[in-house]
Structures are given as C-alpha cells and as structure tokens.
Length: 194
Image (tube, rainbow, N blue to C red; front, side, top):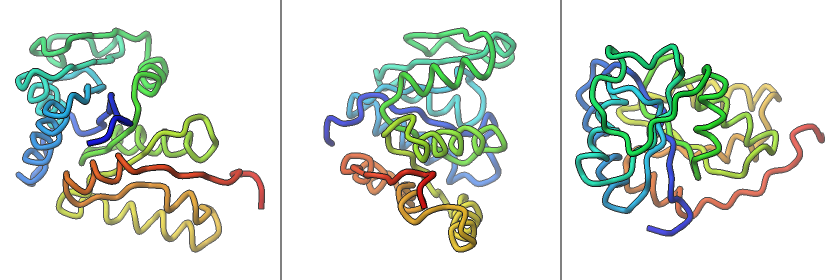
C-alpha cells in the first residue's frame, strides 16, 4: 500500500447488525490497517462493529486513537481499554472535528443514524472544500446500495454535481477499498459555481 493514508477514521455501528458479513468485514479492515501500519481513528466505544475494529487493530499491534464525547465516556460504552490515545471531547461537535483533523481518510462500514451522519458530513466537507481527503463506503453485502441510489437520484435531480458524486469511493471488498484509497486524487470544482 502507498503512503498517502497513515490514519483512517472508521465510522460504523455500535451494534453488530444482523448479518455476519458485517462483523467479518469489521475484523478484516482492522487486520489490513494494523498489518499496513495505518492507525485507527474511531469513536472510542467498544461495542458492536466499533469494538471489533478497535480491538482487532489493538490485538494485532496497531495504533488506536479513540475520540469520545464526555457524555459517553462511561463503563457501558468504554468496556475495555484498547486505545493508545483516548481523547475525551466536550461534545459530539468537538469529537467529530478532532476525528476529522486526525484522519487522512474516512471509511463507513455498516451502521445506523450516527454512521450515516458522520460519513455524510465529511462528504459534505469534501464538497465544500474544507478538506481534500478520500471519503469511502465499504459496501459489505450491499448495505449502502440504497444510499448510493439516493445520491444518484439527487444527482439526476440536479442537487449533486457529477464530480462530487464520482468522488465518493464505493468498494465491495477490502482490497478494492484500499486500492482506491491509495490512488485517490480527485480535483473538485466549486460547489457554488454552475
């Protein structure tokens, strides 16, 4: 793998979901990250897919940076210490800003409302020019198919420009994900120009 990604923010569920493919993918991305010296930046909890990713990176000797809001820094969320760094943020806004600042790229695995909100926010920030980092979804078992269809629909209706739509990395497997992250070099136009 290339040297462009040294830290990767992974957004995913604090539950494991119903499909065993989701837990397999969480473990596999974590193994790939640890084996390639890519540090994990994540939300700081040990539950669900988040826990699988963090604990797997930690167990394989990788570097784990957890960023958790003060409200969630409690034993039922942070059940085991796996972080090399655990940053306690004042609130969710500070948490996300710190995660975005510490990351060279962003990947969403299956998850719920929080996962959607986090990946769509960094995608929005890319569109507005606040960063030039890759934004990706690992489409395990077709989990993100409906989101991808919705984005394509918004593009067709004139709300998302072609270059923005095409800047989102969509990968069905781990090798494809990291290959696309490595070669990502997208130049986007001005969101506000027509």
